[in-house]
Length: 365
Figure 1 (cartoon, rainbow, N blue to C red):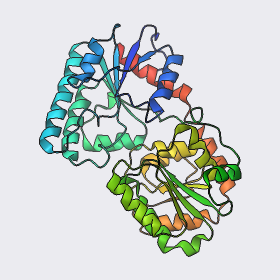
Figure 2: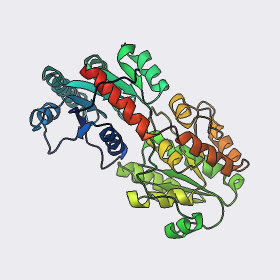
Figure 3: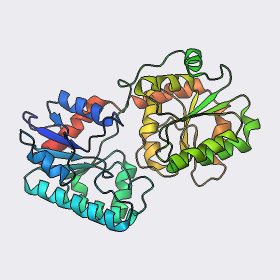
Figure 4: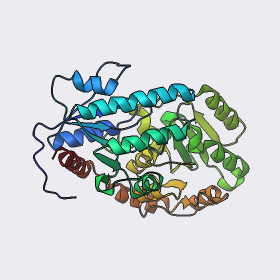
């Protein structure tokens, strides 16, 4: 993509949906774009009918580009009929937006919604959205390859732009023992951290099973699972399994932003045994704190972590997670941590802001 782009003056971008409360990604992207001279705005107020078109129509100033992110809030529904209705309404909303003269950029963050009951319906929606989009952004080549295999993509309107780090957003790390004391954790032994919303696709049940069956191999180590479950039933299921597993501590509450650094400061290794993932903010958060990571060796994750993949395992290997846990007790974790930090340097928001702005400028031409 050419570096010679038109001026960003008066370019106004509406980002939807507004997930800034749950995820700092949009906040950091908007800040990087504003540095480039792009005015980034978010919707205000709740609109049940045609939320995107009405947000554009009711804004006091002209919107040049709609930058669409996650689709889940627009294609809701617990049964196929309701979801079909929402999907149709969403596509009408997008079509009206296009007819209004607004350019559409979509970032494909996920395969489909996590734990989707109707993936086929979501794929149908995405297929049409891809045709309506002026530009489509993916965070890694693996994601682009997946979408290319699933849909007919126009390669000339796709771009790979990495997901930026979280270094400047959360508090800086503190002394390990101080962090452990603040959280009431053991002062000795390694701590393996799994932090994030408790959801089935994250492989927590498998992790607990491996830990329970092989605790003798991990010595004084502690597994710390921290995060809230969206589904109370699933949360109780995890809590029951934790109670039956020696050496595991569960923090079931939502982890506030100002306390994130305590968990990563206390941990020696982060364990993220995802079953299926396209882009992982959890991986990037762990990288932002320079933590060694245990994770499956899948395309998008490997691209993100780069050469700091010492503790990755093949997802098809039933013993892979166990072997990675064993390996973590034998390698130089400090050296791996330094390598993680170097790889995280690549996820710089200044560069990401420039690349994203170039996408906007191309769509406007």
